[in-house]
Image (cartoon, rainbow, N blue to C red; front, side, top):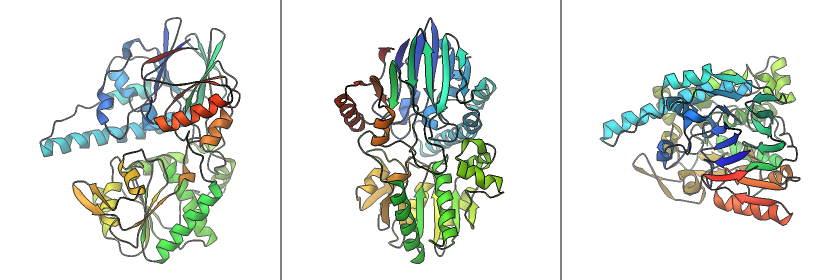
Length: 447
């Protein structure tokens, strides 16, 4: 087998890796680059999409699936394989991305800026959905000369790491590995010893704070802010993170740890995903499944309200009294969260709570680093609200968990991590005897 890394090299988005054997070309993920520069998504692929025979997906996040419709637009005609929950979640993820692209085009025209082309259109999403095939966990499927098995990655409902066998050799692709000991999803499975492991390294330079300590701090921040009449603003990914935050807000309410206040989810995408959650109950932990069996929505605080229209979203900026506002995007790269930050950051009674990864140099990272003023939609905004970063909520494995997952692996290629994180993890892995490479874009490996 020959592996070429065509994305997520020195960055945490754009996952895309090509595996070849006996003339058959199998793509592992094909995600969008998020954050800046968005122009990376318009660059040519390092391969001809018409020559790709099939795609296997690790999970439904946009940075792992967002360029698959573009493959179809450029001539790909093969099938896409993933778990059934992943295939259910892909549709709203891609439809929302297309909507945002169209809004970017309208904004560019209005401002007289260069107008970007659409990466893909509705017909390309339909082609993907029509050509997709579900793969259950642990059931090996022959795809061309490859034998492919998906195992639980514990990162999202339906997320998987991919085991590929051919020619007497084994490759394992981690996708994104989940954070262990979380209550809403099962823990990741462990991989078999492989000839090569293509592994993510998002938090390769630091472990997460113990999860129970994170929950204690989260409850304290909520109680303190809400009791003081302030608002808690939480930037969150629409898939998994927002629902997990809702799960714990509901629990804190039930325990009396926080007052019951209006909780607004200002994200049509999150609304759609939350509806799908009830259809994929088998993808969750036994605890979550037990709630569903008793007819209880485990992701619904008492005063949960989903906003839909732009007008509903704007009205949240003028709310009186304490409230919790959850909105996307989680990395502050766009979306309704930016409007809420513009209005809520200047108020010292409020709190901004980060519950996910913030790329270096991005708006979120600058705020966490203590910026007293930031620019949002052309306006200078004072940062007077209290700022908290709760790393324990991460959906990714921390450094210690990555080292544990890779314990027995002799040969590892690191992707999906910024270079300081990859370098730190590589040093630790080499210290115990593993052969480790930090992949470059277009680098080729013999498995």
